[in-house]
Image (cartoon, rainbow, N blue to C red):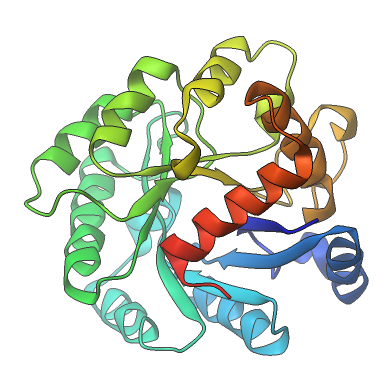
Length: 256
């Protein structure tokens, strides 16, 4: 098996007790590469430290929309410097979250525009978090000059019609454990219709474990269940889906 987890928070405290063993379990189970995601300046530094420790791990640096209220100009300037680190392959996670509104929406939008400028300037793909904000996100993206975009909608959670609008802008679509939840028929329909060259897999660990692991801490090894679900939706073997989505991740992020 040749899987790539394109969205994981390996440095989070939920993994402190068994991080080396948990990563080794995943590697032995067929997860070959991990993209470790930062959520603010200090967190992004921690994400890079893990990527410096494990050759299979790469990093992305960003401000989760929840944290944008604390992103000062000085913090953003420091974060931008981290993009030059050789293990940093993407900007993220960044975006809009109107479900929780932990940061004011105008601040979320302003900060997202800064990251879109970095996407153009540094030519690194962007990893977007979107929850209950797909229409506003679409308008902001359409308002920027650089299209098609290089990037992904992480942990996609909307329907096929919405997905098409983002595919038209150039985005890859990443599916996680929520794809396996019993009530998510619309999400499975979207996955089935997602072009094969835009499909990515992720865990978003330690959050959102797949159906059979609900209630537990998520970890990269569990993404096999998501891969099996995607394989059924695309009438492919799970090994073929693993190879396909890993090739897509390598083309987008340059992880080899």
